[in-house]
Amino acid sequence: MLFDLKGKRKRLVQVVYVMLAVLFGGGLILFGVGGNVSGGLIDAFKGTGSADTTAFTDRVEQAERRAARQPQNPEAWLEVVRAEISLAQSAEGSDPETGELTDRGQQAIVQVAEAWERYLRLEPEEIDGNAAAFAALAYGALQEHDEAVEAQRMSVEARPSANGYFELARFAYQAGREDAGDRAAREAVRRTPPDLRNNVRAQVEDIKEQGLRFAREFQKAQREQREQARQGGQEGQEAQPGQSFGPLPGGGAGASP
Image (tube, rainbow, N blue to C red):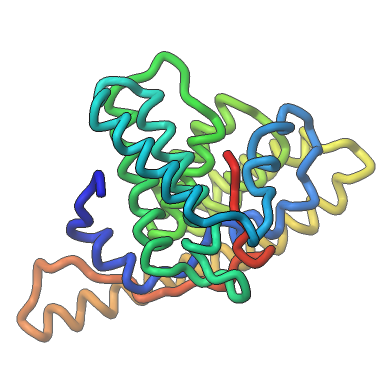
């Protein structure tokens, strides 16, 4: 493996379920709305669960070898992001029936975040919008909500679309950032054709309610964990969120970003 799992992410990956397409769920109706999305996230999540899983593993290994040989090449790290997100969505990475991540799929999500950070440290001239969206999904699954917002912001700046702003709103609400979520939601509605805007507004109301409720519960759980650590004489240790997420819509079909 190219990366060693350490610290916070090593602990979180033990409890996380797939959040990739769960985060897309409410926004699926927006695919194709606002343009500039064909060949990107839509195509990236197409595929069938019957795909040869060894192909995903081979692709990851090839990407990792390239990144090891060319650590200063941003495109090499992008290929790791793409390969790992594909593996996480394959039958090797998530259960075809429930969408629950396997151990390898959980590791793949961590690898996405790690590779994305290596990519950003190289300060590329132009951010890859699709890869940024994949990174946002990985951060969401890892419960690193502020990082998810930032990655999705980069995505919409590179490839603005109604669906991209809808997902930015979702991430912002889950991070407890209501004002940022409202701004992104308004932009999502603005970029939606007039005859679909009422539908989008209704979806926004749902993700806002659900996201802010999630943020409150998540923050409460963190406070309780910190208090338990303090009472147990472990003050200073980082709280470990225990939230797990639901199944992957579509049965964990293999992606092909």
